[in-house]
Amino acid sequence: LNQGAVVGPGQYRQKTAAMGGVKILHMIRPAMCLLPEVEAPDKRIMFREKVLWTSICLFVFLVCSQIPVYGIVTSKSSDPFYWLRVIMASNRGTLMELGISPIVTSGMVMQLLTGAGIVDMDQNSKQDRNLFQGAQKLLGIVITIGEAGAYVGSGMYGDVADIGTGNAFLIVMQLFLAGMVVLCLDELCTKGYGIGSGVSLFIATNVCETIVWKAFAPTTITTAKGQEFEGAVIASLHGIISRPDKFGALRDAFYRGTGPNLVSLMATVLVFFVVIYFQGFRVDVQVKYNNVRGVTGSYPIKLFYTSNMPIILQSALVSNIYFFSQLLSRRFKGNFLVNMVGQWQELEYTGQSVAVGGFAYYITPPDSLLRLFTDPIHAVFYIIFMLASCALFSKTWIEVSGSSAKDVAKSLKDQKMVIPGCRDDIGAIMKRLNMYIPTAAAFGGMCIGALTIIADFLGAIGSGTGILLAVTIVYQMYEELYKEHQKSGGAGLF
Image (cartoon, rainbow, N blue to C red):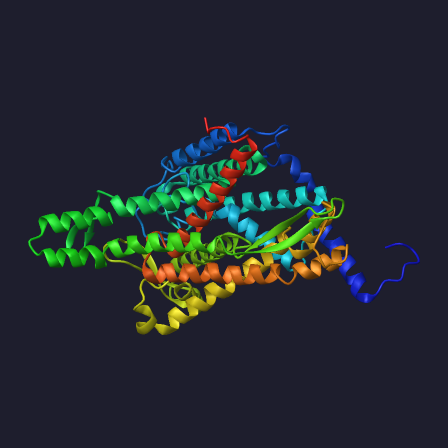
């Protein structure tokens, strides 16, 4: 504080909090040189080169998703994360066991710390931004090691006594190194070498792969009726051709409850088009240049202002609740507090663990519309949880990501642009933008949550969350591809 300056109590607390927040970020400065980092490009990356780097990142991810972890006794035990694996870009028993979970979790934790004022970052300071990214990366590495150790210690790959200490250490190291690969691939895309971000690319690939597989899988599954084809289309054709009861076969094709059906496939297509339709909802705020008379433009504020970030962060939250609930349930089954967090039961035919009680059960999406009548408390709690968490994450994200009304006002001011009818100062512009941006963030987050709920109730393939993520990511990548294509002069892709 400057000597002789008169500062009120509120201003003093804000300055003190800011100073303390910066000190927290400065604590990780000695570790910055040890963190893996992808250097930012020193020249503009051409469109074709971006497509190439994006393809390489995707290829590496897909290869790692098929390489089994060395040293495991079994990976066929119950899997509490089977429906979240699609969203977290995870594949059971492979190097991509952890998927993007550490990256997303670290981002969620840093967002909450920033929103609570524990960590303060000046968006205008390059040093603060670098330290914040370094802190997020360091936390991601710590979470990767912690999750890898917890996976092994909880017996998901077999009892540690059967695996052996040496193999247990090797498994942890493999998962840690795979986590570092994912972190670097994501940074490679984010720094401008690729298109979009690695996290979004991996999520969209995993979800689309799941939808195609569930629709056309030629493999068979064991159900109460015997062996059936897993793919909805293949199972429908097989039943209609081979069964003498054509009406019964047609009914099962649309409504079978033992696997994906044609109604689920149609619900998936319906949700896809609905999300695309909502992408076009926006408010255009008119702006004009101060120095150039008569030249006007617009700043678009979309309904999905924070895009898919609320649902990604909400999925990370649910994933971690499942993880710790399952871990505690394995070790302290029967404990009252542990049962309040979550109770788990293995399904008879698939062997998967599903939440049947506790908080974990109530945040699990109901599997059909009938649950609204058979278990209304579960359905209502899930709806409230989804809407509230998505709105909260969306509202908080704009403050952390530099897309709040204050940040946008400063950006317009730096470009010598002003909103007609407002004074030429940041305060007036910010006041006008505050009429739209916070509302768009909160309401857009609730709309994303509502679309997810509808998709879950309709039984869409890949879960409502997965469908929503895939559609928004693919739409974003299409927009980025179009922009990059225009920047390159409209030349062909190759």
